[in-house]
Image (cartoon, rainbow, N blue to C red):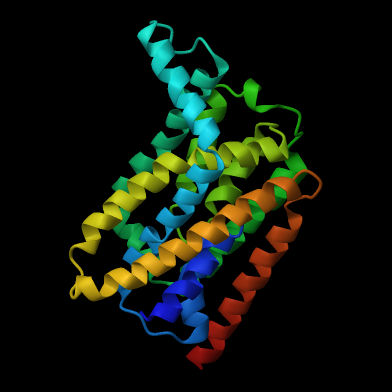
Length: 275
């Protein structure tokens, strides 16, 4: 992987991590469509580690939220009343929503890595994202706020997040869908989606760091990773700000149409190349 490729993929990651169009799909499909040859093990580790840049974007954008939640959780725990405040309760809901993806992700890690190596599977999973987004818009009543979330909502959204461990299933798209199917307002569902991304991204990044040590010529690969991380951080921050404003007045249908178009394009190109 060259420095240019890392920066380009960092931009792609920053743009698509929070938009409901699957960053993992774009990281898999971009090299395929452009004809870039990359070692599968290096590409997989880079794809996971570059998410740490968008993780940093989440922390920077929501640092006041995370700080307040952390303070309330610790304070209420010390008082023996872990759910005494709305902020503390939100913190526990974030943890609960993280559990399904963590457990399922560890259980099928090899299967997920195999999916990352298949552009066909990735294209098909993009169609799953499109179905999620359209279903959310057609079924969700969008009447509940963040303060009205309960443990059932968190667990439900958590299982939708678990689906996104496969490339092509958008993490933000699936979790926003999960929230909207529980009648949560669209911007609120997006906000909760971004908040619950912190634990799962930290876990995925930690596992990728372990895999990183297995890469040959690691020292020469570090500048590539750093450039991708830096780029995805800046672009990711801007994407969060834009999407939260966009969802106040727009639906998810446009993103669904984009996922369908990209999926069909990849499948068509794959069929032509196979001839």
